[in-house]
Image (cartoon, rainbow, N blue to C red):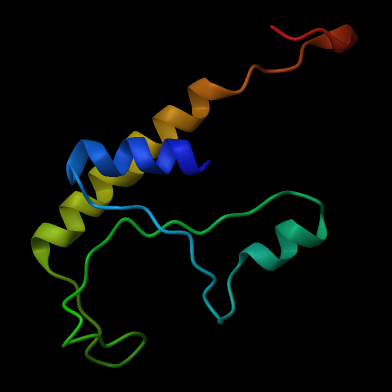
Length: 94
């Protein structure tokens, strides 16, 4: 996962380090984790750190950050969907 995130990051923002963090907050991933499905949160969006307004009435995101975030997540999903072989009937890997 970290390698795929690093690849997608380097494609849009060369030289920007990828640093895993733990965010203290609720996510929809709780139900997936309870079901035994590994769940990761990946942002891929830059914010002005002097103007962060999460979940407020005036929450906003820069236009460039929006489009870069879409490109980042698209590339990441494409990379991850090609990475793992799909198990076939009979237990063989394809």
